[in-house]
Every structure is written in C-alpha cells, then in structure tokens.
Length: 103
Image (cartoon, rainbow, N blue to C red; front, top):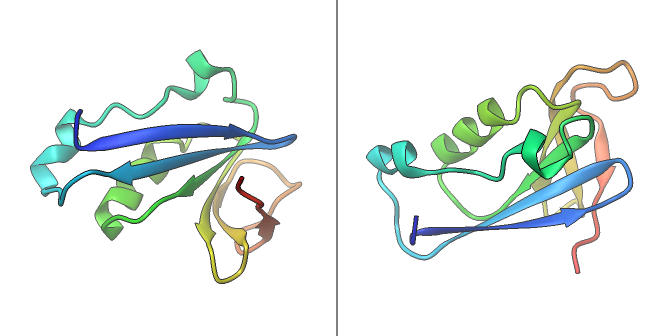
C-alpha cells in the first residue's frame, strides 16, 4: 500500500482517520487498501471522522469500512467540522456537525 498513508488522531469521543494519497488511484486499488482496524486500534466504540483528499468512491469505501463504529463523519475543512453521515447512536444524528481541530 505505498499509494496511501493513514494517520490516526485520537480525540475524546471520536478518532480522526486521515489519509494521504501519494499518487492518483484507480478503482482496482480499493482491493489493496487496508485501513486502520477500529477494533484492533481500540476505537470501535467511538465515532470515526474521515479526512483526506481523494475520490468520492474512496470515501464510500471508507464509510462502509467504518460502518460498525458508533458513527461516521466526513471532515469538511470549510466548516472546521465533520458532517455525520452514518450513526448507530441517538447521541449523534445524521447531519450533525462535530467540531474537529487537527494539529
């Protein structure tokens, strides 16, 4: 997986999974991507915020991958927040904004 790098930022109630592409990717590259495992990394019971510049289908793949977590949000730098797009808790609703401050 030399074409994508992941970095994890631990926050109180969520984890930011930030990715950086080192080259343009193709749909067939999805079969080679191994995102940080929420269970192994110990954040399955938290929300996950996805951040990075990539194609919409990569975001679809990552949202599906992190579906079992408490909620999934997509970071929007214009809002300095993540927009919740999937949830398994009544604490957070679809469309909620989660403030995110990345170092």
